[in-house]
Length: 125
Image (tube, rainbow, N blue to C red):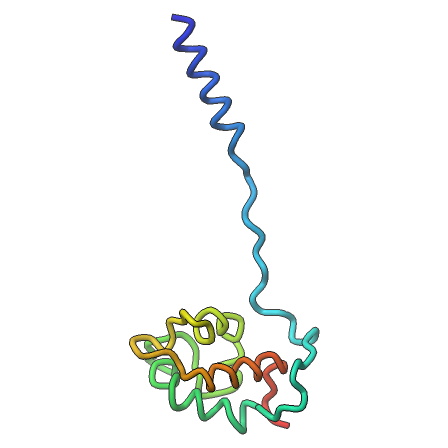
C-alpha cells in the first residue's frame, strides 16, 4: 500500500517541480515615439503625401468612424497612429492577415509603409 502512495507523491513532486511560473518576455509593440530615430531620413514618405492615400484605398472601407467592421478610424493620422504597433504582424509581414479577405498589399506599398514607420511615422514635412 505504501508503494502506490509513494509513487503518487513522487509523481506530484516531479509534476509541480517541472512547472515554471514565468510568462514569456513580452516586447512592447508600441515603442515610445519620443525615443524614435528616423532610419531613412532622406526619404520623404509622410502620412499626408503618401500613407493617407494607401489607407483610403485599402483600409478605410473597413476601418472608419462609426459602424466599422474593423477597429479604429484609418481615415485620420491619429486613428492610424494608434495601431502602428500591430502593423508589422497584421499588415506588413509576408503572412499578414490585412486587408482581410483580400490579397496582401503589394510589396512596394508594404515597403513604403515600413519606411514610414521606421522614420517615426511623420505626419507632414
